[in-house]
Image (cartoon, rainbow, N blue to C red; front, side, top):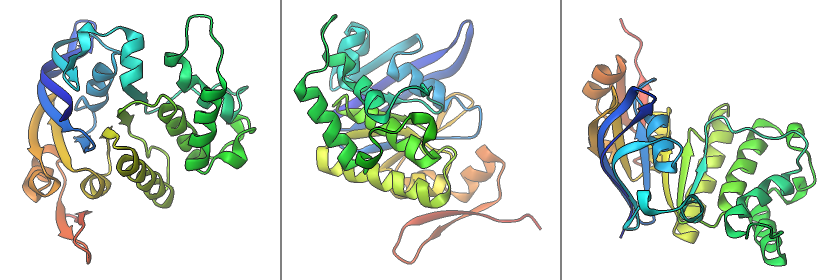
Length: 258
């Protein structure tokens, strides 16, 4: 089953079109990573999928057309974590994660015991239980990223859109966060669509890659098919080698020009 399908999608800001005619798909339970150089349109594409930007073309979620869904219906199907989320200083971690239950509440309804139970479960799974009463502004970078992920998971959607989820994290915290997302994906059957600057992480965690440059699709396929030295040179203007780690994982290594 296809969880997300894009057909000839174009989107942008005002009169400026940033992505042009993008077609791609993510199978249910898969991980699709959108990669490309700075300014290629990766975040713009994700915002269009999340319903935050107008678009032309077709976007469908498990066969349901995005343009026929209300905002609340879409929020029950799709969870979105922006690259630089606004975290209200006065909220505790629990209060913030509870915001993820909003799409499931009536106009004047308050969170039920079931909603609180879902939040407690998410906090436990992301190892945030001990931080539940902490204010957001007291958290470290890695803890904040986990809190953002917890809010999205509390929506209980089948599709997660993660825009640069490892921004600001060192390699250890970035790896831990991606391992967590991958574990939850396999446990819950969630489909993940993310943008990632780090091509090694993209190659090791995603099933498929879409390489965007200049707002259009330059390549799509398995990581080993998309990430080649020639493409890295052409689209990133980078000298790099694509290597195999001892256990077979792909590694993109920059090579200093001679």
